[in-house]
Length: 198
Image 1 (tube, rainbow, N blue to C red):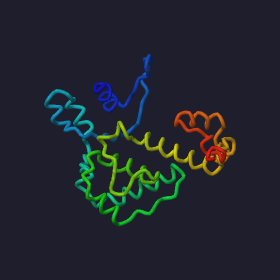
Image 2: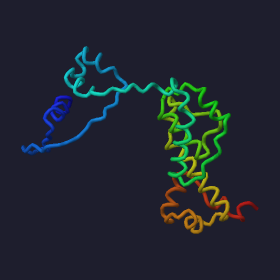
Image 3: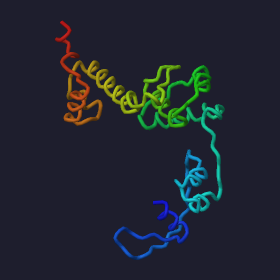
Image 4: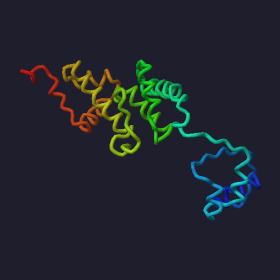
């Protein structure tokens, strides 16, 4: 792969798979790595000529823990994006929360901060309890979204007193989709009907 990329950068042509005609390309490459590519080149794990071809302008972006002053602005940006994505109001971001966020080490870097901002918007991040990246497999963003979805359906069933058709209409979901989600989350609509409480 490195040889192919080097050829594209040097000759500014590509060849489609299975074809034998060269197609000229005009592109600029922005590459990012957390590896020391020069060291990798010395270890013969990365081509030195490709390294020099890519390394025209080099920017060193330190990890989040070394630029804590960026955390409030990044968290606000990610939370705003999440609020838009999930059609939720942006919760108040208190100075105490921001100070606490700045005190964390963020081993997962910006991605970890982003995931915690999404959890915050979904109401699944308690102040001062971010989910570390080491727990991503067990409690990743998908699990948090599932928990939010389950709570939303349960709240709506409570409001509609267990009426599935009305719940589906209010959630703007086809009935079949709602039934699939009820099965997925093991929610029983009859529990929310008035006769169930007597």
